[in-house]
Length: 259
Ligand code: SF4
Image (cartoon, rainbow, N blue to C red; front, side, top):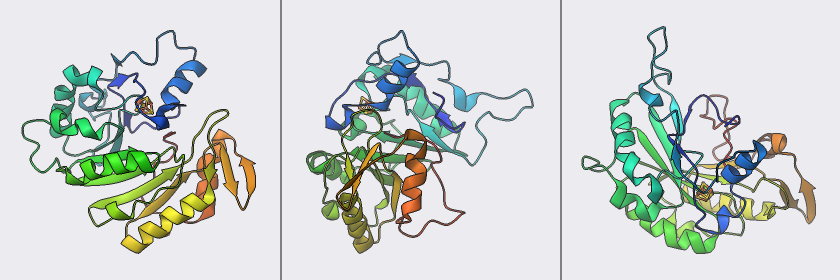
């Protein structure tokens, strides 16, 4: 997928919709844009399945040591249809302990049954982002997420389609909360007041907060703004509301398309 950086790994592609945040799923949108002949709901292994092990002619790994690898962004890593392939992915993750693998999921309730036998308290090099889109999905997924043995946990509020009170779930076990609006055509708007409110909750709890992207429609001070896709990340950054304030050395998701 063209919008992904070279630090991404999509071992399979295609996903089924499971919650309100999936309504305008970016995987479906991208497939439609590129005229994919295959149904987006059909999950299939990609040619990149073994990318973490692939080596260039120069003898170096294609995925450079020390990188954060955005994993399975054209599907959901915990999708049922991929159960038969996941064990091999865990093995590659374990083998490439010099990389950080970062995946988001709306299926955190499946994690426990999907873990490898030696998971223990989690692999040090795996970061898991629990995605929530509204209060209802937050109240369902976050208690499950909080109880799971994971070394690095983040919360991805995307696409934010309603105000959320995450304060019951925010503490030092959450390394970051990231917010994004919804991209696409005729999408649900993001209210800036919701973003500021969530930021205040994060500040209160001492949890880092990132406004990743605005989405296509932002409502601020009662005014509706239509924001082209190419400007949504830059506009969020311009708001200057990340907590702590962003520095040039801060890790960056770059142009990774989330929603
Ligand atoms: S990729 Fe994510 S947003 Fe798209 S259908 Fe799957 S779970 Fe939903």
